[in-house]
Image (cartoon, rainbow, N blue to C red; front, top):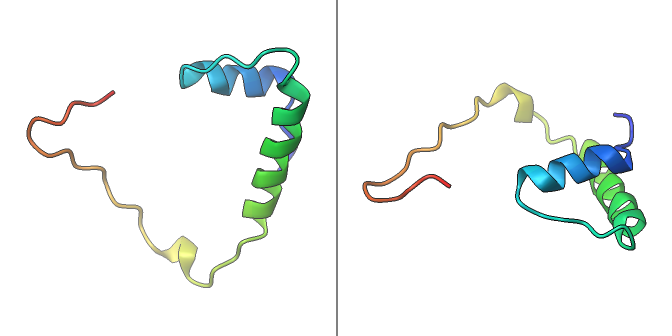
Length: 64
């Protein structure tokens, strides 16, 4: 997977309501790309054969 650039990271952060100051973007870029690279290396046998479960909210729980 190609590394995320600063603009993509800012867009992802904005999508979840976060602002990343310019002074922190280099650190966030390095950390986030390192996490993604580490997750790519996880290869649990049979993981892709399992269908994801739907998220079901209990009565009264609001979606944010």
